[in-house]
Image (cartoon, rainbow, N blue to C red; front, top):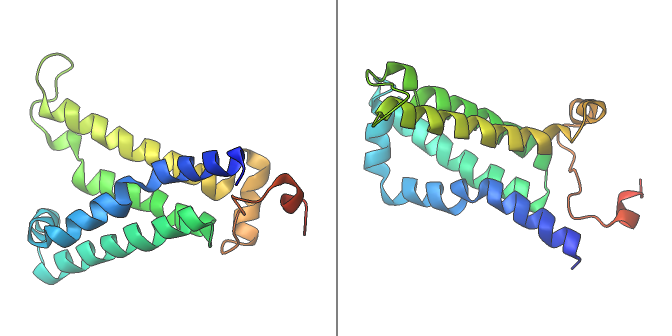
Length: 159
């Protein structure tokens, strides 16, 4: 195992560690609390359960895709969307009545969490599309293809 492979794995692990195992495990251990949180956004009990189960599946399977390199670009794309949607649904800082720039403020704290979700989404989009504009079309040409994150330079040159 080369130093580059280790760094690549650790970078990808740092992106998904929030979801797998921690958030996924929290959803399993505290399903009723997660369902109650979802009920704050949707009125239907069954829809709230479906949201939590969908979130659990996304967190587990898409994280595994990013880590293993199996359809990792599509998995990262789904996780980027997941981060954006959860930011909008569960971090609505604009609804907080106490948004202040100085002193204690729940609104400002939620704003930072909102931005962190979008920063994480940006990290996933770099995996999805690559590091530059020229590589964006690669995703749309073959969205299920792997980026081959653990290939050595010699392996990367192979067709």
